[in-house]
Each structure stands twice: as C-alpha cells, then as structure tokens.
Picture 1: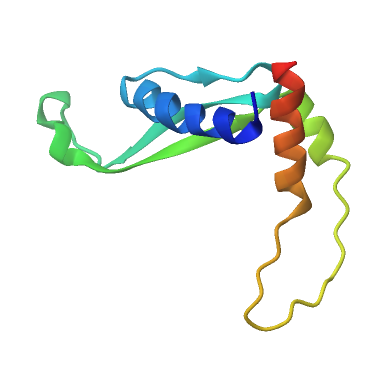
Picture 2: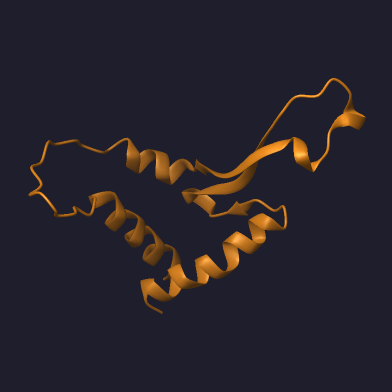
Length: 102
C-alpha cells in the first residue's frame, strides 16, 4: 500500500466520520473532531441550527506528534519568486503514516 492510497482513503473516510459526529483517533499521532462556533442565546429553547456561525476541524496532537514537533528547527530560506517550497514537516507526516501501516 503506498502513501497516496492511504491519503485517498483518509479523504474518503475521515470527513464522513467527522460529519457523523465522531472524533477520529490516530493513536499517538493525535485526534481530530469538529468544533462549532455559535451565537449566544439567553434561553436554551432559543438555540437552533441558525445560531451556528461556522464549523471547523480541530486537530489535537498526540504524544508522538508533540515529541516530534519539539525537535523542529527553523531556518530562514530564500525562495525564488513564483516557486513553492514543500515543508519538511510534510515528509515527517508521510513517514509517520508509513510507520503506522507496517
């Protein structure tokens, strides 16, 4: 199984799972869940779906993720105009995904 297949599976399963109201647990990597922002109301009976202003996904890093982030080093780089740089952290995440699969 290659990393792209894992990511494609992730994109098919995780959004639906979150939409259904579940938290997705990735073990030591962390978990993600949905967080809603709403307007306040004085009485519970006045709260309804129109009170919700927005929804976002919250990722809460687990122990392994936090440990690895603690090792991050920052360096200033020059990027030629019109070019895009892929951060090293993306490669770290892909390595973690591969590690968890095997």
